[in-house]
Image (cartoon, rainbow, N blue to C red; front, side):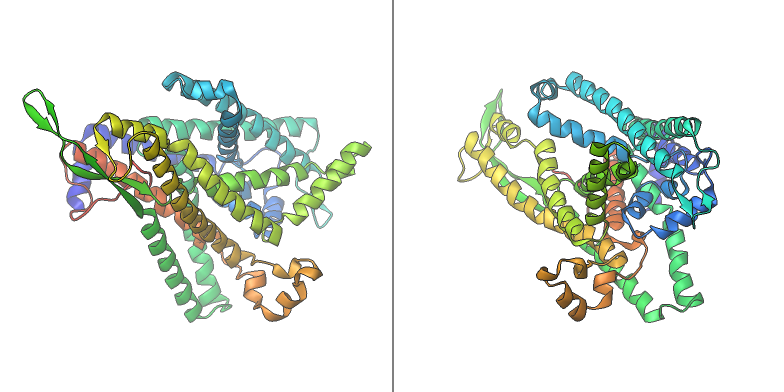
Length: 475
């Protein structure tokens, strides 16, 4: 390990990339401590603590605690991710976007420009909703969150939060282009990691100060975390290997081919992106409910606001309908993201052009259909795995709340037969949930793999002597 770290410092280009990445992450963390003007920070912290067990707690984790303190980076990277989802969905139905996607680098740059502009619009919309909602909030009916409410406060908040979100988008793109690893994933990774000391301190206080937990519970929690990490690494490295044989052919005076290899298909090709996509979509109704449209004097808007308020209540974090929708969306986005990043027709065509074939399967269309069938089956496994991982923090913090179902669906039976920790959770911090561990482990594996690739390309040994960390996406 020490020799590998020394090798990194001996490669100027790799050293510059790593230092640049660390510098950008430092800038990101610096912005997480710059408060939004006009906000009573203590009152907002108190209000946020009351709803820390909601979906906003998960979003605060993704933003590195910026949302909890309402800093200039409070919106985090979620507007950019939501914009990416919308553009990718529109690519399926829009002939213009589909044509751009097929034009190569030039078309992708144009789609990236569309994504950036849509990010600006979504950031301004969410910031406006937050500003309007903050002016109507107070603590105990006396302490206002906004010191000087009015149009100037709304304009300042929209400008500040939108600029912060756009700057984060720029940081992520710069890390991807000039640093090591995926910039957006590393920003989310940094936001989670910085909260780990606070989560550890919270556990220490519960066990050794308040004595609300005993030491055995702490050991069980740590063992559970280790088991989750082991399971995540096992599945993330899991792959289905499709055998490929290359026929012998004469190139000049040499005989090429005649070898057997395999095509690796990852069980979880999308990584954590399906979970992030699902969270982004589910936060949209919560954003709309911040406007308090049910208090409008216009009848149509008032009815719309009442419907949104009911929708937000039914889809509140931990509610059964929210959990069911969350699982369905994760599985859907696992298949959707795979269709974006992997093209079976293109892979089959490349194998055919190189003189390869899969034993027992005819080249061309049959090969593409076979790959598509295998990918669909293993993606179902990957989707259920992601859903299980995503439900772990919800179960630990908020519970499943099956007792909130209608009476005809057995709410009374669940309330009397299921343990309290299943229905109401364990009130354990998000940082020890499956989603955060999946992001941390997955991004760490991806980043180490890229560093290893840089070392091996320059004839250095990687971090591991007996093996290599394989990528989470199929090659």
